[in-house]
Image (cartoon, rainbow, N blue to C red; front, side, top):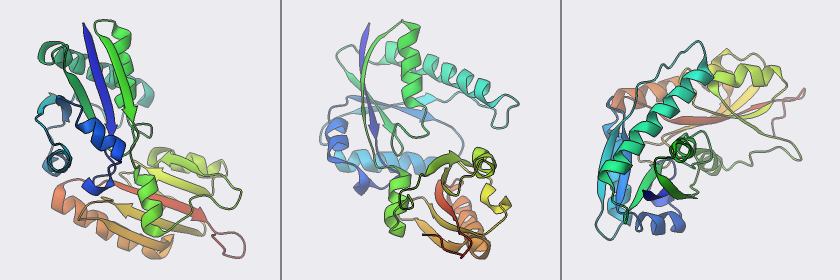
Length: 257
C-alpha cells in the first residue's frame, strides 16, 4: 500500500508567517493528520484551523490522532523519546492504512520548521522502516521560532565570526559549562536560565507570530521578573506557553554584541 505525505512547516503560529511553498503544499493535501494531545490545547487547534481556513481554497478533511502518553521526566530520556516515537509511528500508520485512500495525499502541519526540535520526520521514517506502507514524502521548510525571535528583536544571532549554539532548557547548564556564551534556547518549560551565574543578556519571546505575542529583552537578572510574569499570563490564559530566547554572555567590559 502506497501513501503520499507532505510535512509542512507552518511557522510559530501566525497565519501570515507561512511561506508561499507552504501555502501551495497545503492546497495539495486531501487530509491532515493532527495529533490530539487531549490536554487543554484548544487554542493550538484553533491556530491550525485558522491557517487552513485562510490559505486553503478547496475541500479537505482533518483526522485527529490520539497522541500516545509520554513520561516528561524519565530516568532514561533518550529511550523514553524513542519509545514515544515508535508509539506515534504505529498510531499514524494505523490511520494512514485505515482512513486514507491510496489516491489521497496526507499532510502534517508542523509547528515552526520540521528540521528543528520536532519529531515528525523521525516518526515518518519509522513508518517507512516498519515496511507495512510504501511511504513517499517531502518536507516543506517553515519559519522557525528562532528566526522570528531574531526578527522581532532585530538581532543578528551570531557574534562577528562566532558560533551560535541552539539547545534546550534541559541541556543549557551543560552547554554553558562547556563554554557556550551565545545560545538560543528552546523547549524550556522551567526557565533554566534563571539558574545561571554571571553577566548575561536575554532576548525572550513567547507565542511568536500570534496576537498574544510577548517580548522581553535586557540584562537577565533585571528582566527575569518580567519574563516570569509574561509566562504566567500566557499559561493562565491558554494553559500553555511556547517560548524561545537568546542568551549572550557579556565580555569583561560588559559588551554583549
